[in-house]
Image (tube, rainbow, N blue to C red; front, side, top):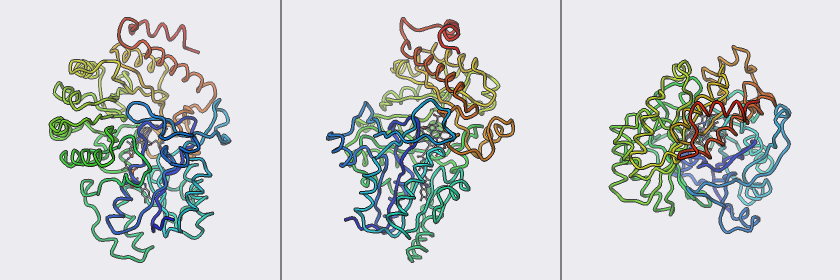
Length: 474
Ligand code: B12
């Protein structure tokens, strides 16, 4: 029997697809560490736990399936597709622990005094709802506090749909400790609130069953304000001290016996001279066997020769460069983040530093408001001509962003839509089977080109367009 005052829960994912691409509930693990620092007894259930002993036993495995970098598949169970997603020609599934394991996990615990539930993507809210319903059934009367990204971006929807006892928006530290002080009748909890990201204790990774990698942030937020992105609505922008980040890397990888680290930063390369460069030099000087992954898009504009070389020597293994689009008007709109010329130079520098082009990936965005298919095809052709792999991202309209409001004003997205329709897979601005099929073809085209990335089979930019028209357009 566990006997914790505070039970933290990371809910399931409900989606058409999900894979553990370095997916961890970092925010809630920070909160758990912070509460412990304040003397509270904390327990954790991660519905996305691939290391759960009972799950592994049912799968007849001693450890989860995993690929290079520690990533791997979640357990998946097909569930009924919600009404508003019926037009999608795909199964809808719950990813993570089987429900029965989660229920057993709750029942095996003494009643906590407070339950904290996090939330991530807006369109994953059914998992949050399910978790809160089951908690209410098994621990009636225990207050449930909801926070996280969905709760911050759509507080009204969350209050109505999830009906938590308390909902806090934004970074937790400001409101949570005073609230717990009130609920647990420990007013002293309000003292010693962390003043900066560096004054947080390291995330409480020991609360998870097993780890194949760690995730980390060297910065928080982003100084830009791209029209499709919600980061500015979630937190301010701040940099951690490079030496604190390296200290965390060294201590935590040693403690947990892992060597893979994924950065969750939105703007890892901003202010490179006094931040990422000294940070990488420090890592290199320690001669660690740590591999670094950057699954979030990197700003290629800041990759000069020195940074490219530092990235190679510091063992970056996953490099995703944000390109978004080569169309000029689009680039203006998304804050002039990168021009094709800058992207070409960054790729050349990375290759000169030792990376193979096919190990580099570019993020390209598709299905933006008013974006023609030709713009996407042209951007794909350009990226392929650099020899790099293309990673297509379809646009998810995020409440509170400029593009979300524009989409509503232009009649492309319903006001007060179910957040399930903000799922990138459904091509939210179209929401039809035909549009889904059309964009699937573009994904297949990108995949086809990726198979030919670099070397003899590589296709020229002009040929790429022709091949698209001949083989992949509908
Ligand atoms: C890391 C990340 C990812 C990771 C995975 C994250 C995961 N855990 O699964 C990867 C790279 C895979 C990813 C993918 C995508 N992502 Co992403 N991602 C992020 C990012 C950069 C960081 C999230 C994070 O962990 N932050 C760090 C922690 C410390 O912060 P936090 O979770 O917010 O926690 C704090 C507070 O929220 C609060 N809190 C948290 N929990 C709780 C609980 C309680 C009780 C309380 C009181 C408070 C509280 O306190 C915490 C500490 O301060 C955010 C942007 C951002 N700045 O948040 C986008 C973001 C969440 N992603 C977004 C998008 C668009 C995507 C993609 C759809 C991109 C695409 N088009 O393909 C994909 C979708 C993946 C999928 N399968 O559907 C959007 C949200 C979309 C949406 N509709 O909800 C965001 C907001 C970025 C943006 N562009 O605006 N992403």
